[in-house]
Length: 129
Image 1 (cartoon, one colour):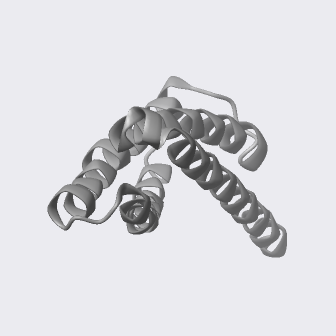
Image 2 (cartoon, helix red, strand yellow):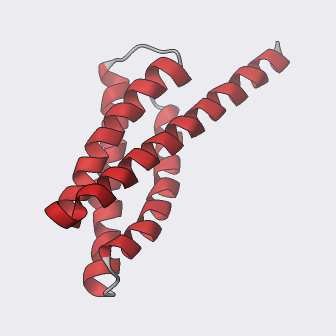
Image 3 (tube, helix red, strand yellow):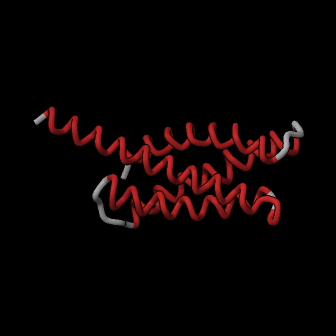
């Protein structure tokens, strides 16, 4: 029984990582595709909305074989909103507007740092909902 639970946990984790990688690619693809036309702030928001939608649906249905609920939707949306509006926007402001990096370069450490914070936020929320 313990071996079966461990195997299930590993499979869920692998699926979660695949979804995360796909959504990171979606986020970055949208950002780099539209940032020149919209500015980096709007590009971040557009990438965020699309990747959040895909992330939620794939993780609920594929990774966790669960059903959407108000509680899990609220938790995931709240975590993503904190990440985009507090963590990522602050870091982009720091890297681009304060330090003077280009938005293309500033996006890279911002994305890496936000992935780490997102992991901790999701780990915290996963035990709450």
